[in-house]
Length: 360
Ligand SMILES: Cc1cc2nc3c(=O)[nH]c(=O)nc-3n(C[C@H](O)[C@H](O)[C@H](O)COP(=O)(O)OP(=O)(O)OC[C@H]3O[C@@H](n4cnc5c(N)ncnc54)[C@H](O)[C@@H]3O)c2cc1C
Image (tube, rainbow, N blue to C red; front, side, top):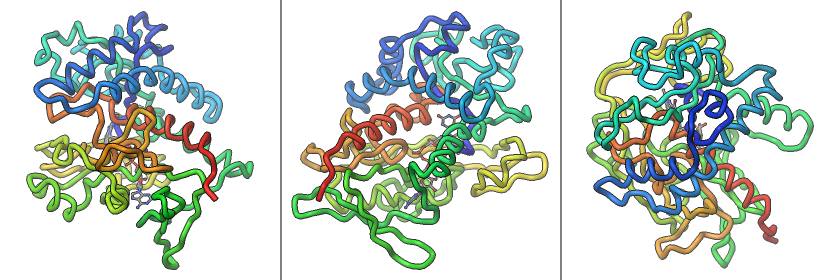
């Protein structure tokens, strides 16, 4: 997420209201259902409904967090006004990214395929304002979360461990998840989880082994997703009986691309591709962008087993989830859907986990 383009989707947000864009959860629900379930019933209706109901408040939540923790505006309203709201505004590069097109637009989707013109499409892709005016603003979108977490670590509210990779779940005799086995530089450790575990390891784009098992047509593709998104979470969940869904769907990008970020973030949000001094990163052709397969969840973000029952104390969100709103290639609902899906079920999982009764 720290190296994404900087878009987050949401309906009924403060930004939309301030820019006079009429939108609400029902409209987003209908739109996602139209895209994702065209030809296929790919995503359960209740998952789409819950996503749509949470998307707007999550954008507002992140916006406020940016003010509180970073002391800056997450979105640059003036830019959208200057660029006339960015709905179908080709003159400002609306086919591209949020920096040239403004802070709010409707891009990333083949609208005509669903019977509407781009001018009629509701602007729901909220783009973080890139401080250095680079084309991609993923670091700016991510920074409020990062600063929030850093603040809570500093205050002793939470702790964070890096280079501590999930490898397996530990369950009790009833199948409740009570901890994980993790790999560190100094070997394997067990971590107790009295209330449960949230799975968010970002899918399997970087694993040839997973592609071989589940999606051989993806083997010729490299990936721009993070290099350590190798399906660890999906594998660990599978080994305690999780059901898988939608495993061979991904967003293919056939041509080479160049991304540009503000170079000041290269050290802070280090990643798999290094930028040059001006913030440019080259991504080769045949790029397996976001992969869409993973575990099944219910509307409480609980991971389901192969009989459709929740695995106690196991939650998931983001690209580890196969029951998602991303659609097949070309049926994608628009820029910002990945991050907003991860937020929607991530926050639900957090709230449900906090309310769980602690296991002994
Ligand atoms: C260049 C680019 C542009 C994009 N632009 C957009 C955009 O503008 N809007 C949008 O909505 N989406 C965009 N996406 C997609 C979006 O970034 C992802 O879909 C989203 O970040 C997925 O969230 P996640 O939390 O599931 O995974 P991630 O954000 O990938 O996070 C997963 C994390 O899990 C860690 N991890 C992996 N294995 C383990 C393990 N075993 N144990 C512990 N941790 C582990 C990884 O290191 C990583 O930090 C873009 C992606 C890229 C690469």
